[in-house]
Length: 238
Image (cartoon, rainbow, N blue to C red; front, top):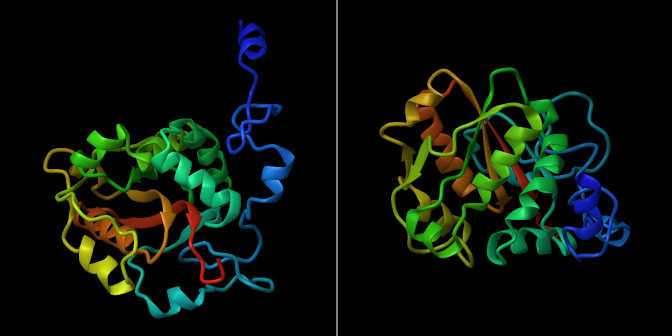
C-alpha cells in the first residue's frame, strides 16, 4: 500500500516541490540554501557563534544584554533565504505539512536539551488568530516533535489572553510590551506543567519577547525548568 501511495504521490521538497527521496525533506539546492545551525552556538537562543566552544556557557551579543528567563535554547536554522521561505509558508501559506520535517530538524538541534520526562508546550495562539489561520504553527510543530522524540505534548497548557496586534514591524521594546501579561497558564490544563521540565516550541525567534512571556507563564504554572526550541532564529547578520 505504501509503495502504491508513493507511486501516486511521490515525496516532494518541502520548499520548492521538486521530487525527493524520503518524506518531506529538502532537495539538494534547497538544502544548500538553508542555513542550518551546527557546531558552536549560543546556549540561550541557538544562533551560530564563531570559533569552537570549550564546554562553557557561551552567549551571543543579544543574549548577553537581554534577560532570558529560560535556561537553554536551540534553533534549527537561520531566518534567511530558504529558511525564511519555509517559516513563512508554514505560517501564512496553509502549509502545516512543513511541521513534520521541521520537527525532525528541531529534534536534531535540540537534542542536548531533551531529558526523560520533559514535556513539550507550544507558544499559544489567540482563538481569533486560530480562526483566521485554522491552525497554530507552533502547536503543529510541537505535535510532530512529540512523535519524533516520544515526549508528551501539552498544546493547551498555556493560553493567550488577547489577540490583536502581531509582533511584525515593532521595535524591541514594543515587542516586549505587546506580550506583557498576555500569556498565562490555562485555568484547567496549566497544572500539567507542575514540577515538570518544559520545552517551549515556536516557529521563529526574533527579540525573544514572546518566548519570554511563554516561559514566565510556564513557571507560573509550576514548571521546574524551561528550555526553548525554534525552527528559525532571526540574527543580526540576516
